[in-house]
Image (tube, rainbow, N blue to C red; front, side, top):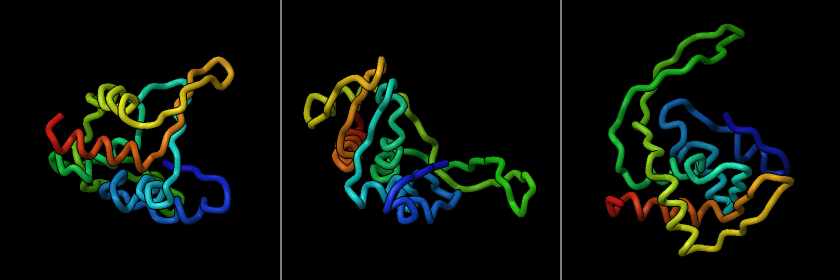
Length: 134
């Protein structure tokens, strides 16, 4: 699920099909198109959902069938859909390498460590890393 606030909220979240849910038809791709930013707040790159968009674009993951409960006409139903087999295992390493090569602002929000960076830069970096077999 995605939530958005502000003048671009509808543009970002209006289309979000189940199949290939974090790929080029997802809100992640709309953020990329708008050159939006990622704020990691109290978490590291292992939780950087934007890197999943790079997995699609690098074409480095096998296809799989996934399932999820959704509300359909007010009833909870299980839906099956095509997707890729996500692997966030290398995300921490990709993020560390990205931070050496790309601008990332690191600071605090309250007591939490925060990282702010261009989502487009992050996705492009991760896509190249994954496509190279990183």
